Amino acid sequence: MLKDLLVMIATGLVENPDAVEVIVDAPTEEGVVVYHLNVAEEDKGRVIGKQGRIAKAIRLIMRSAAVKNDCKVLVEID
Image 1 (spheres, rainbow, N blue to C red):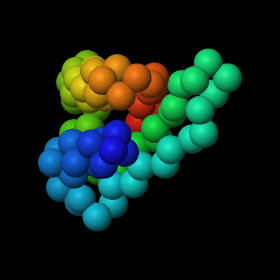
Image 2: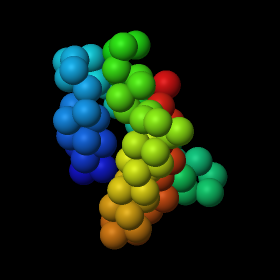
Image 3: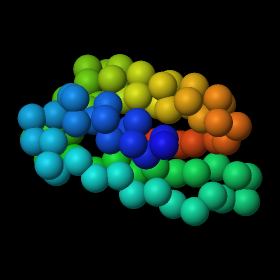
Image 4: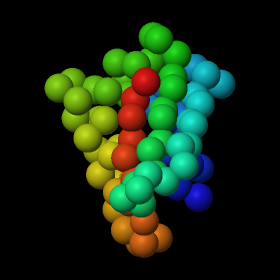
């Protein structure tokens, strides 16, 4: 469910939605699930935003959704 949310957010931001890929790692010892967001090279600026504002907003939305599902997440933009 969280993976679908991240894909939906990212595809709405980029010009090449077919290049959006999310890889989910197994939970760490602390119970944190890491989501790796991969987008096309020319769309990285759109996902990160000026001074990282969009990336911070994406992470905030994901953390909020994770709290609702009683888990911890970390979003990495690769």
